[in-house]
Picture 1 (spheres, rainbow, N blue to C red):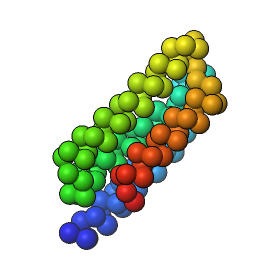
Picture 2: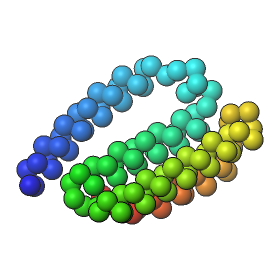
Picture 3: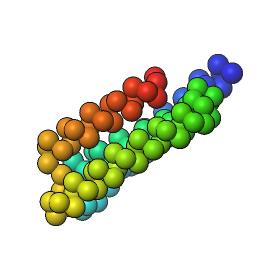
Length: 111
């Protein structure tokens, strides 16, 4: 089981590195105009991926994963609501608050 986790980590790492290099050079107009939202949403996507991995590996129960995914959806809802109040943008203060909430969920996922 331990070797499986190591192999999985290596595969995910190489895929993530390749994806990062490709995405770094392919910023969309939206990403350029909404960098705060891009950062928050990128972290939310990463949280969802980590929760799924932990569930597959058996480190989280189904109930725990469901609750964490629900928390992530709540943060995403807050991000979208804040953006709707300011022509699609979020302020630094809103980003800071969303990041704090993401940190709290991240601490529950592990690693």
